[in-house]
Image (cartoon, rainbow, N blue to C red):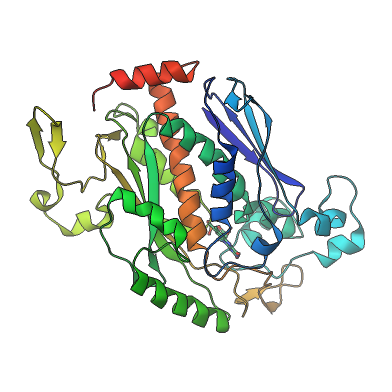
Length: 380
Ligand SMILES: Cc1cc2nc3c(=O)[nH]c(=O)nc-3n(C[C@H](O)[C@H](O)[C@H](O)COP(=O)(O)O)c2cc1C
């Protein structure tokens, strides 16, 4: 399967084309829209979320609620385009409007400066419009299609926010508890940690500052053998880490025990293997995070991703004005103070994409019936 996304933050629309989906996958559009609403939620979001009410439109590849096997095109129209048409149209734009939207006080922590130098631009808008995390809306819509494909096989994805600006939720939650994270304000499951985190976000907002955090994403029900030990590019852990790292503002990703492995001995880290008639091969611990040798091993896949604090600060950071080269305070467009709740939703989506691809590579299938039949024949 192949996913291509396109679209600028204040352009007309965001689009995605998914190639390689089998025929007869039933798609629930309400569920895609629910995921899009979740991506726009959470304590600490900025004013943009009040303008947009993201809803997906399916333009191709689906008829009567089912995929046809042809490329599926998803589209989300940007409501804010109405306010930006004069400066963001594909046709000729109004010079005065373009000037008023021009950004040259390049923002540290953004793609602005390096992008302007690389693409020979005088206006950071030509870079930031694509670098913006607005793009993740369409990745979430596509991720929801992949999730529905996986769900048909009994593979589920969940997660929660485990840290906000140093405040940790260190609970060890059962998979079925994770769904509750979507009903909270921060994505944390521990209410004490959530209160502390909300106070911290409010305080940072008052100070013109921002917060980051970390999320845990889990995959349940995936049988063993997805991914490959044979070539490095097809290793499942490499693909998952790469996908999570491709989300804006992600600076670290862990699989299973992650960086803890550096502190412990082999006996403390490796998951011993057992066998009995009912369970077959099994492990009593899962410090490997469900992946050994680049392949799923049948245990839950456990990933964590760390997000840096939002780089646009209302009390702007020190920078240089691009054309005059004089010291300046970085531009501050309306912005989130903390977007960790959204990150959790986005991270689930990119994980769904990688796992669905690994299933498709191994099982192929022109129809969902073929995929299901092949999946059922595999051992755990
Ligand atoms: C869900 C989400 C929302 C974001 N919202 C903002 C925002 O409102 N303002 C901002 O400056 N950065 C925001 N970011 C982060 C920037 O998009 C990101 O840091 C920037 O594009 C540079 O990319 P890099 O951090 O991966 O190097 C957000 C990131 C995510 C994942």
